Image 1 (spheres, rainbow, N blue to C red):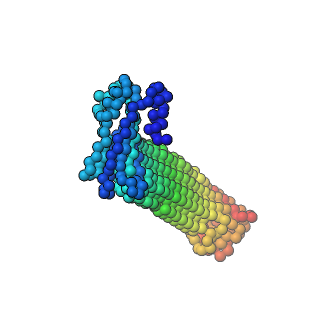
Image 2 (tube, rainbow, N blue to C red):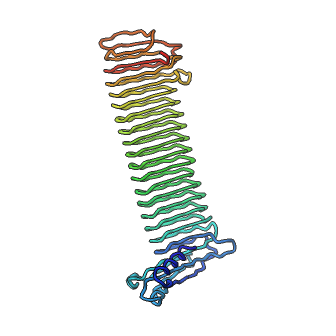
Image 3 (cartoon, rainbow, N blue to C red):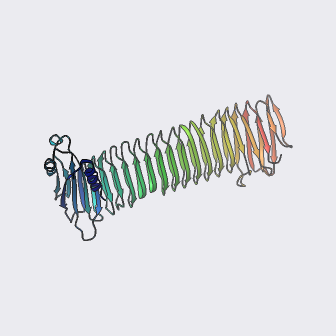
Amino acid sequence: MSALSTLLLAAVATFGRRDTVRTLEQPLPPAATSYRIQHAFVQCTVHVATPGQPPRARLELAATGGPDAAEERRWLERCGLELDGATATLRTTFPPTEGKPEALSFAGSLAVWLPAGADVELESRFGAVTVDGPIGRVTVRSTFSAVAVSGAQGDVDVRGENGAISVRDLKGGAQLVTRSASITAERVGGHVDARTRGGFVRIQGAGSAHAENLITPVELLQVKGDATVIAPFSEITARDVGGGLTIDGGNAALVIERVGGSLRVQHRNGKVDVRGVTGSVTVQGNLSTISVADIGGDVEVRNPSGAVKIARVDGKLVAENSSLALDLSDLRGDVDARTNGGLLRARFGKLPGDGRAHELLLEAAGGQIELDLPADASVELELVSTSGQLDVGWEGMKFTQGGGARIGVQRIGDGKAKLKATCVGGPVKARRTGS
């Protein structure tokens, strides 16, 4: 049952008589490769004509609430469906609202059938737009209109004010912009560019992606290539991005899982959780709580006023924070980690983590350092506590005193890894598995 039929049945039940209806038919130029549709106040649906079916348009209108059926008919007869054949432009026309009886209301639907592969440009005011099927390029400009496009063969460009935008099963790319409504893009072969300031953004399945939002969540799923997100007050979720990923977030949670390229994150306040990045990772935080794990490349994390936890990094690690914990585990490459006033804890399941020579530098100022080393470590150690608080849980380390500082050095195994841990004004505590 069509939307208009449902409206008519409801009106019969409400008013006790049938609405006044009018249907207008308009053939369209069959040789055109591009069509333009301008409509207002009615919903518009664009279909693909079946083989052998000429392009055409049908406008269905219904009026109710007038003084009588005759007045309703007079008003509907002033509505029109105009065609400029030279430019293949179709327009709906309506009389001025000043001449409409105050109690009279109307509804309508415009259905258009176009040849497969034809381009279409739509201008809509206060009427939903639906494009369904293998149309070519689709361009929509809308005001207070929801827009849905599926199955298009060419690129899709939708610019709106406050209507939700939904696209799916597109061969080309999609440029989607609305002021304060949601955007959904699913299974888009090309690049998706989605921008809004107040609606949920969800991109699932795209060649590449760019998303901008202000305060509502952004979700990226299954993007084959590169992706970027700019969303200063939004929760952001990104999973299964095949290329590189760049995120400028700010004041909400951020979850990233499985990125095939490199990752760059700018963040200010909130939780950041990163898992499974093939390339390098760079995270610049501030008041963030940051967790990074399972990284194939280098990692750089700077977070002045938040806790940081990093695990299982194949490349070089550079990490800095202050006041709160800097927790490191299962690192396989070089390390340069520094904290100011917090706890720096480093746990090594294997040392060196990949069997090759590495340099590991750990520094804490005004905090403390805790080390957990494996029993079979191959490492050359230098542990320094400027306050003289050096606690080592095994035998064989040589200690020297320099002023108030205590220094411990020891070569374990062949000393392939070089580890120096220095705590200024605080203790260093070291343990080995089984000790």
